[in-house]
Length: 247
Image (cartoon, rainbow, N blue to C red; front, side, top):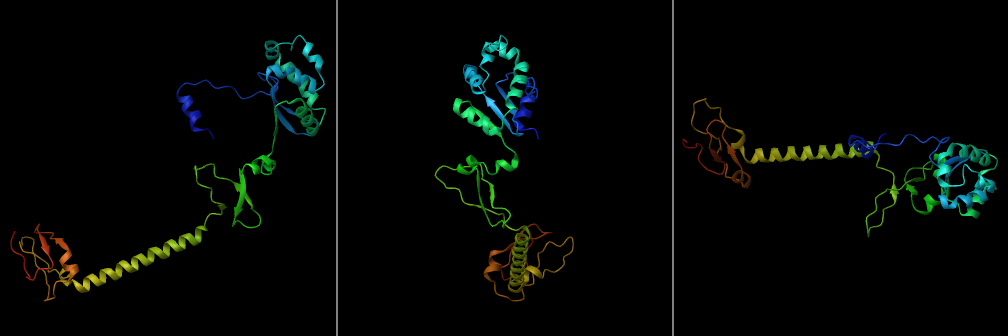
């Protein structure tokens, strides 16, 4: 999936690098290589550390090779140097090269598979992978939230609520709300009959009729005002008359 910032850069007319060609890289000492046990690693070596790398792999003669004895020549002959390094690194295991790089202080990184990443000690030590609560025996870990709020500790990671039970609770709440609303309407109807017993009126009738039947005005009646459909004035249900005057 193309990220938003890449799409925006394309809209702005940016120029993009081509996909990395491992066999013909811009810089052979900044490249990915494979070992004899089919492990991959990336070396990130500055030009000043080229002699240290040559010594670490036991190929000091490369320092005297006219193709690689300065920075510009190594760039121009990156494909040839890559071919040489490919053969060197493929002759030993990853453990061998890790020890050699550590001794020479060479910057490198092991390319991990998705399964290996989940047990990486650095991810666990930095809480990138954290324990997950409530997900059962087969899922004990999860990726931590990337958001951190200053001064607030993160809550433990938990499984999301069960969607079915959540929907049932929501449905029950909605049904309860409807029941309460229905009960309220019935209560209002019983206490304010004038609101619900309006007599049909002719199209040209200029009066607003309400059948209050002698009920005293209740608090609900006094608070409710209803605009008549065909008269255009407001009738107060707390009034005692049965008939409103002409507008």
